[in-house]
Image 1 (cartoon, rainbow, N blue to C red):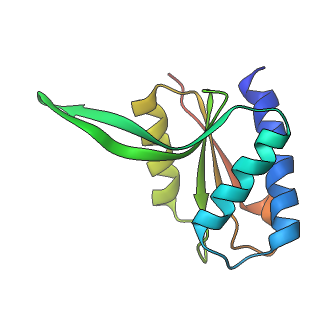
Image 2 (cartoon, one colour; image 1 turned 180 degrees about the horizontal axis):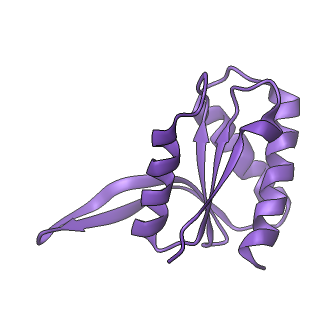
Length: 125
């Protein structure tokens, strides 16, 4: 399955989760429910994946954690904030580069219309 096919399923699933729960909950709630729904779609999903970061001979085993990793190809960064900032997009792009992944989705569940709060970020490896 390609990143684009996975992304299509993720977008639809995020809309379903938002339709059922609405905005205003903690990110951890959306992360857990989104993982569950994606698994129901038959996708392999892992949450809170530690990614090491190396810098100048220093290795941090858990430099950061990926909220959700789908099919070992697509990173999902789950947010529940008033509005997404440019720094959130930059953060996801950095995650993609450090994890050597091509596609990420930044999803803000604290929105009236979720389809307008899903941002696709591509790492041009």
